[in-house]
Image (tube, rainbow, N blue to C red; front, side, top):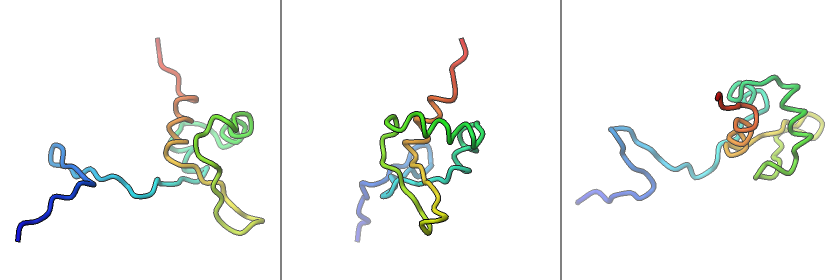
Amino acid sequence: MEPMEPTAYEVKRGVLQAELPVEPLFTRAEVCALVPCRLHALNKWLVRNKGRLDTPPYFYGPRNKSQRLLSASDVKTLRASFIRRFR
């Protein structure tokens, strides 16, 4: 039997690159590590710029201790907002 060629991934330069079926979600602390900012600054940005994020807010955990989860596309938007290019 010949192996079927899957369409969900590609091999580029010997590295397997796959499309994820689900977009990864990050906690606010993890986002602060990915986007160089403090938790306080991230919280203020999230309150002031509610409409700029593409995905709806996700929450995980019990109602009184739920954590906000941000998607990978939200992290890209935050990085573009927090990090400025040098001239």
